[in-house]
Image (cartoon, rainbow, N blue to C red):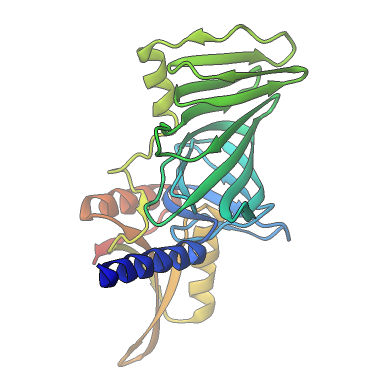
Length: 301
C-alpha cells in the first residue's frame, strides 16, 4: 500500500512538471497561407510547433485555417481572412493552483474555442475573447460535473456574433452583461445598433458557421508531428536558395532550407515539412506549383 501511495505521488509530481514545461500556446496545425507578426514587427509564416507569445498577431489568408492549443489542452480554431491579437497569455498561481490565462482579440474573422482538460493539467482557465464590440469569458475547469465549453464567434464587417454550443460563457457589450448557459444559442450584435436578444440557433446554421473554422485536411494542411514533406526546389548557391525561400515565406508557406553535400558541391534543397500523409503532401505540392509557379515539386517521407 505504501509503495502504491509513493508511486501515485511521483506520477502526480511528474505530471505537474510536464504541465509546467508545456508552452502557453502552440500551433498544432495550419492550412496556409497564414502568418504571425511579433511585437517587434517581424513577420513569418505560421508553422506547426511554433510557440506564440504575448502581443503576437496571427493573420490568415484566403482558405486558411489554424489550430492552436493552450497549456490546459483547450483548442482554438481560426478561420480564413482573419486577424487575431494575443495578450495576457500565461499562467498564474491562485490558491495554490495554476490558472491558464489568455485574452484573444478577434479583429476580423471567425474562431472556435473548445475547452478540454489535458490529463497532465491540474488547474483552471480564464479565457477572454473580444469580438469587436463583444467580450466573452470562459472560466473554471472541465470535470467534477462541469461540462466543457464550446463557442463559435465572428467579427464581421457589420455585426458580431457569439454562439454557445456547449457549457456557459459570460458576455459583456457596453453596459450589458449576462451569462449564456443555454446550449445551441447565439447573440448577435450589429455594429451600429442595439444587440438582438439571445436566440436558439438551428443546426443547419451552426454547421455553416463551424465549416468556417474547421481545419481542412486533405487539402495541404500541416499538422504537428507529420512525417511527410514537399520538396519544392534545389539551388546550387545559398543566394539562389534564399531568393526562393523568401518568396515562399512571404506568400505564407513555412519553407526550410536543407543543405546537402553532393559530388559537385553543396546543394540547397527547399521544402515544407509536417504533412500527415502522402495525400496531404501531394495536395500542397499542387497548390504551391499553381500559385507560385514552382516547377515539379515532389513529396517524400
